[in-house]
Image (cartoon, rainbow, N blue to C red):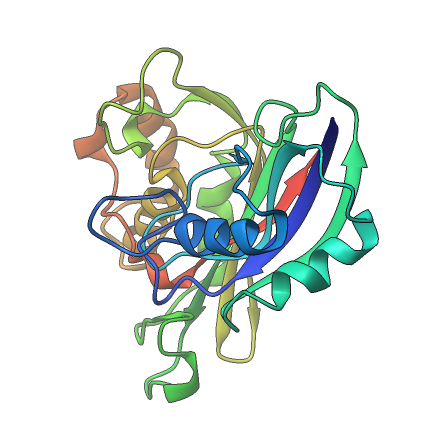
Length: 245
C-alpha cells in the first residue's frame, strides 16, 4: 500500500468550495471523477483543508492510499488528462504510511487580493475584490500587528457545527502590501477557523474606513464576540497560497 501526496492548484470561481456537496459542483467531486478514470476506483482522499465557494488555491494538498502501481512521476499528467483547465495537479510524491495531508500540516498561508483603483479591472473579476476607497497601507499594517501571536479568535470566526472546542490559533505573519493598484493581505498561521481570514480582511477594511481604530484590535480579540469585528469579506479575493509541512 502506497501513500501518495498530491499538490493541486485550482480556480474556485465555478465551484462551491472543495468538499463534496449534495446539490452543487465542488472541486473534490470533479477531482474524484478524474481519480476514478486513472485508478479504476476513487481512493479515500484526505484533503488539507476546506475552501469555500469561489475561493482559489495556489497550493492545495491531499493524500490517499493505493495499491495501484502507476509510477508516481506519471500521476500528475495522468490525472490532468481528465481534469478541466480550472484544476491542475502540480506534483506527486510517495510519503510515509502515517502522513496525513491535514493532520501532518504545520501551518497554512492565505493571501487576499484587493484591486484598489477607482475603475474596475475586468480581467480580475472573480480573482480580486474591487475596492475603490483609499487604503492606507501603513495604517492597516499597524492594525495587522495586533493579530500576531496566539489568541482566541472567536471574534473572527463564523460559528457553525464545524467549529467546536479550542478557538486558539497562532498567527505568525500578517502583512499588507501594495504593488501599483493591487493590495495583497498575507496571513500565515498554524491553523484557521471558519471564515477567519475573510473576517480579518473585513475588519482591516473597517480600519481603512475609520470605523475601527488599529488600537481597538486587541479589545476586539479579547471580547470573543463575532459582533465586535468587521464584516466577512467576499470570497473571490481569497487564495490558499501555501501549505506547510
